[in-house]
Image 1: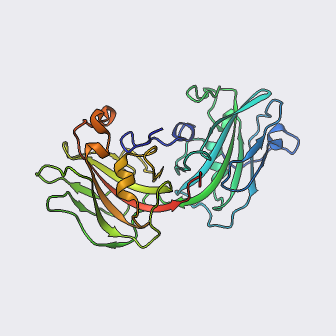
Image 2 (image 1 turned 45 degrees about the horizontal axis):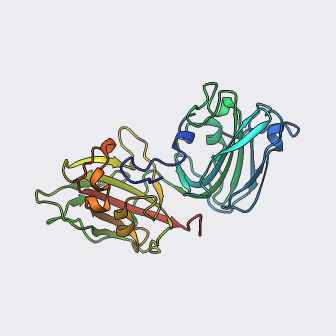
Image 3 (image 1 turned 180 degrees about the vertical axis):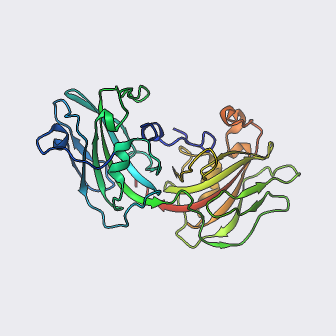
Length: 321
């Protein structure tokens, strides 16, 4: 899936996490408590689900206890996740990020059982959560995912790193843009920077302008990157997407693989080699963006130049490394 910035690359687990998990256990003899998971942290788990009906009880265990910092209330968390659906005596894998890109799970995650399951957990932990409908998708289920109102879901989560929804670049300010390029003004702490488009025509080639110089490791091809960004269409001078908190969204940093199968080419070309902690402005012509077809859902024409201001928060190795 091409998770480029206009849809704004809808995370793999968005539909799963934002609909509708926690910290109570089931009895030792219940089927929920006999779900087993083996394997190393941050590697695809082996999950064994009993060939019998689920008990209807919430079960949360921590097969691997990490030694990193605990997840703070209100913070998002980068995690690899595998989700199974359990119907009667059968079960199957629904989705997994272990063969794709770890996702940032939002602090306001909608599944009550899942919220309980990760609350206060330490980074480096593997959490196993068995969610009956009451703690998962309720009696309505989730038809998009193939989860009925009577189905139990089984989640395996490897917690990699936590982030504040307002996390930003941490380096030294070196530029505010301007001239023939857009100018960028830092906003209040925790808010998106403001991009002002000049009256001249946009450049025809990709531009990468460092605004804040980070001191972390440099991004490399195929790594997983976690970032904040705000995106403006040069033609309309309007924001068409952002990960920052706003009046309509709590905000969640965005994770993506630094390769053209996951994001627009301009992201790959413009961000490769940029140190973690940096804020950069990418001016992306159509050929390095959405091409001649544009992106109608985001109001982007095939001739539109796009401006992204990207804060690089972290990088982790690819799942395929």
